[in-house]
Image (tube, rainbow, N blue to C red; front, side):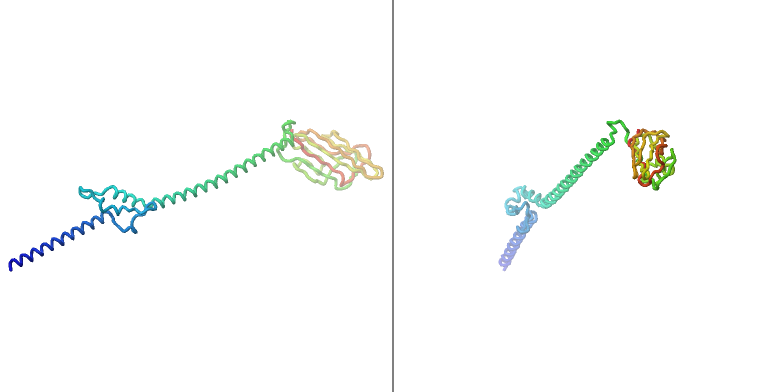
Length: 277
C-alpha cells in the first residue's frame, strides 16, 4: 500500500512539472510576440508601396545568444513605422508649391501688362508735349507760350449806327470775352498781359454809300478799313498783329472821309492773344 501511494505521488509530481514547463514555454512565446509586434500581414506596415515583411524573420533573428537583445531589423522596422505619414505630407507640399508657382506666373503676367501700358502712356505724353512745343513755337521763336487764362474776344453790332467822325464804334453784342479784356459799354479792348495780339474788324456800309474806319491803338491809327459799293452795301475788313503791353487799349473808330452809316449784324470786331512776351 505504501509503495502504491509513493508511485501515485511520483506520477502527480511528474504531471505537475510537465504542466509548468508547458505554461512557461507559452509565456516565453507570448513575450516574444509582444516585443516584436508580430501581427497578421493584413495589419502590418505598408511603406513605399511594399509590405514590411520583417515579421517573417523574427523567429530566428529576433534575439542574439547573449540574452535576447533586439537586432537592427527590429530598429529599422520601428523607424519605418514612425514615418508612415511622410508620403502624404510630401504630396501636400507639392500641391502647395504648384499653386504658389501658378499664382506667381499670373502675377508676373499682370505686372508685364501694366509695364507695357505705362510705357505706351509715357510715349503718348511725350508726343503731346513735343506737339505743343512745335505748335506754339516757344523754342524756335523764343516767345513764351501763354500759360495763364485764355485771352480772346469777339463782338458785333446788333443794330444800324449813324455816327459822327472820330466816334468809337461800340460793338454791343458780345459773342465771347475770355479774359475779360473787352468792354461792351465802351467798345474798347484793354490788354490784360504783355504779348503779341491779333485784331480783325469787318465793317458793312449803308446802301449805295461808303464809310471809312480804322483800328486804333492808344489813340493812334494802326490799320484802315474801306467799305462801300454802288447800288449795294459794301463790306471791308482788315487784320493786324500788335505787340501790346498790359493796359494798352484797342478800338475801332469812324474817320472823317465818306459817310457815317455803319450797318449792324454784319459788322464785327475780334481780337486774341497769340503769345505772351
